[in-house]
Picture 1 (cartoon, rainbow, N blue to C red):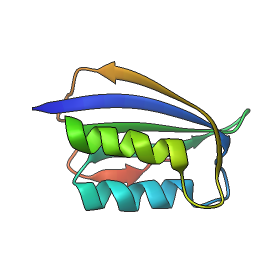
Picture 2: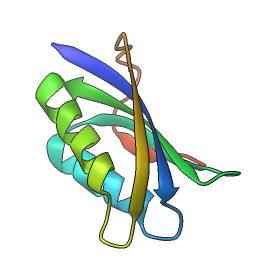
Picture 3: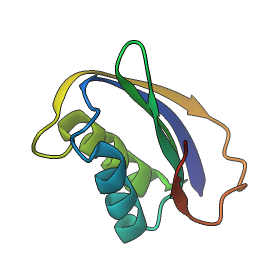
Picture 4: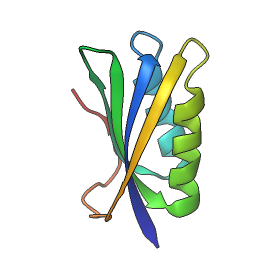
Length: 92
């Protein structure tokens, strides 16, 4: 059964390879969706779709981020999965 999480991560998340690392982890886990920078203030926004276990792993990653990130907050909104994604992309 697929689930969908819409996630907003705040803190030092720009310029620390957060998006690239998120894509790498998502591809490893087989999670689909996207991740993008949101400016003013600094956030990263992402949508993850996949099995509950895999999506929860992505959320766990968001609480840690890559080594240079400093995570202040992670907001998660659970939504109905749409199945609209074929892979995981970095959106602009």
